[in-house]
Image (tube, rainbow, N blue to C red; front, side, top):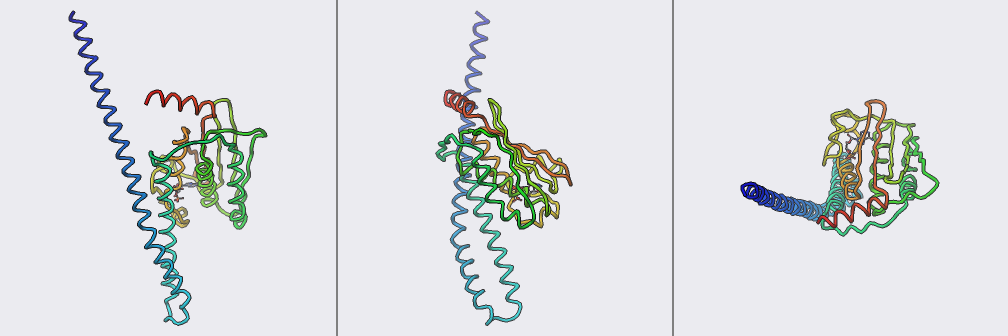
Length: 272
Ligand code: ADP
């Protein structure tokens, strides 16, 4: 009889711990939704006054012949500032959108080869201006995943954009897509600056930028890889980086095959 009472006590404690865990999880989800909403609202609110400033700068620029010496430099500095703010706001809006737990996520079956081809096309011209090249290696048959084309475009585009941005003239960026029964993998390899081991752990965080002056010389918000991380997670995948300073970096995105995605989604729905 003692044993039964003991087991019962345990069961009650367990049930309580379980309930508390669920409550905490709900609270965390609510906080996360609140944070996303706040970021989205603030970014939207900043957008209008900023476009007014940008508009008036344009007017001033058209009158610059009538203005005293030195105005030009001030105007240029203000323009750099506004376009930087515009980029941060755009990235913040994307960041809050892709992380919004309340967003309807209805992924379709898509061929990742199309995404890779489109992104290559997009970056081809700016790359060629710096004598850089984007090479792709794709399987002959479709590489199907469940996903949002726009989101996956963003993932690949951010990786290729960084690879080109943080590499010198005349370098090659290589995209390789492979698949097996359970997973699909896309690697993006560059011949650029490389990332130190300490920074490799930090690059997916919000607003992180390396302290390296060569990185700081390039424009950026530190949100590109945070956006990549969020989208990949939403697609039930993972993203990792390997790199060597002065040699280059490889970012690797792994996504589940269509069957795996559906199995995991069904499992999650059952648990919820
Ligand atoms: P951003 O490029 O706007 O700074 P990201 O989130 O895309 O922001 O990248 C964060 C940081 O990670 C960069 O500032 C840079 O320090 C590092 N990084 C990202 N991609 C590369 C790359 N391909 N080569 C070297 N460093 C990189």
